[in-house]
Image (tube, rainbow, N blue to C red; front, side):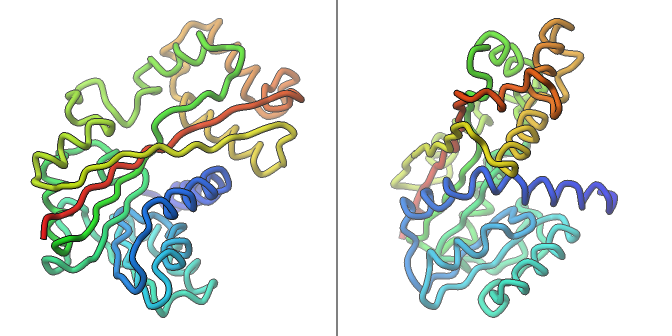
Length: 272
């Protein structure tokens, strides 16, 4: 990835955290990670979850972040150092399908919008993650699962969702069993136990502060921006009027605006 593209992607990740930050804290509270444990943040990106993860395993916990992009890891290291957390957080460049860790290295594994969500062979991935998990350890994979961001335009939102762009990262050639929401099936096939699921909601009410407004506009563009040639010109014009900065019809500026999105977490335990 070119340096400018990496920088832009990192900026978007940091911006989006303004939306999902409270949801992440709620998910970690529900997950109830053990104190003084050592966990892997698989697909950690720029390390935005290092601090909440470390607080979740305090006192005495440790976090290792792994990501394929060294550029994102460099940014993660900067953020962790700035917050004085580098004594308990480390990073490693790694392909999640071929992890450079010893077997049974971690007490738990956490991944958001990456492991199990992105395209790839789910069976290979789950087996690889399970291999570096200690017996009795917990695997927790979470990803974006739904939204209602265009109140009053359910047909438009449904048509945008139905486009190939709107279904990403689940591609047209993907098989149903590889959809993120089918992870319990993959967990079971990998011999994992105590499989659970939980969804968490991030809600937004007008008036929106400037950071939340910017992040929601970025989210709409991320979800549907590539669908321009996949919907009718009328639908695209309507969507543009509702979701573009500076538009007099921008839906986020309506005084009664309410929207939400959800994340779903699937967890499983490696048998002792």
